[in-house]
Image (cartoon, rainbow, N blue to C red):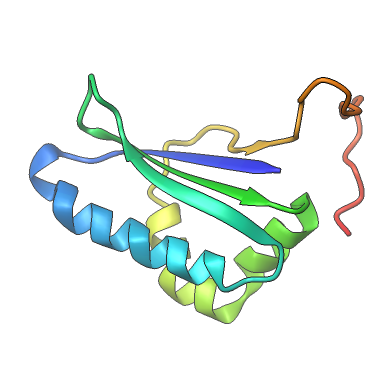
Length: 106
């Protein structure tokens, strides 16, 4: 599962924001089910930032958001994300796509 959180941050605040994103990613990385993650900045619009993380399943991601450390170190920065859907299922050829109802979170 892939989670893409995008942010709009004024250019002068970019360095501090990058540090905050790294802290959030570090907190998420300590959680069960975390597979990997990247921080990025848009090459054409430097005010746009992204935190992309990968998880073994949606349940792992949702449980991570409930952990005390993530609430303390990641949720404050994640709450600044652009309001849009952020969780994506694996849609590589050969995978079964979600068909109108949520999959088990376990």
